[in-house]
Structures are given as C-alpha cells and as structure tokens.
Image (cartoon, rainbow, N blue to C red; front, side, top):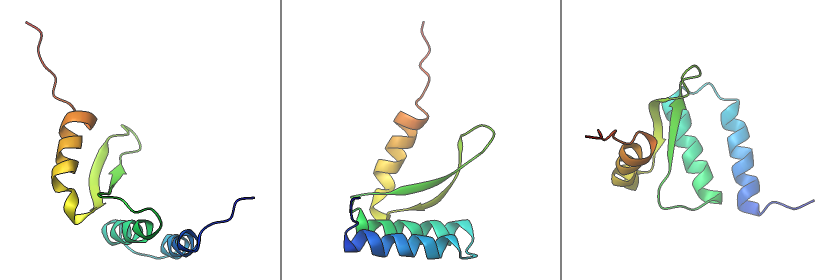
Length: 87
C-alpha cells in the first residue's frame, strides 16, 4: 500500500477536521483550498458550489487570490462558452 507524504497526511487530517466543522460554505471552501495547497501546489485554484438538479455551478465558494483572470477566462470560454450563430 502506498504511503502518504507528510504534507499529504497533514492535509488529510486538516480536511477531516474541516469536514466535521460547522463552517458555512465560503469559509469552509477557503480553508479547504488553503489545506490542499500545502499538499498539491498550484498556480490557481477554485472551488464552486454545484446545483444538484442542473449540475451547473451556482456559486464560487473559494479561489486563489491570483486566479481572477484565469477563472474568468475558464468560465467564459470552457465552462459556458458563447454560442455563435451560424448565418
């Protein structure tokens, strides 16, 4: 069985504690991203809420401070790309 690195184990414990917390979605999302960043470094992260019926994102729960432009571009061009009329 593979072993977790120390950073991964610490992050796993933090996520478990957060799962048991009574935090509202926004602070919970921010703390989850902070915990994950320690084990999985990245140049931008985002955590969205998803509507269970439509499966569409219904709110931004947390995002890296440096992620504004990339998040906007991804939302506009990948998640919900513009529909171009064919004439």
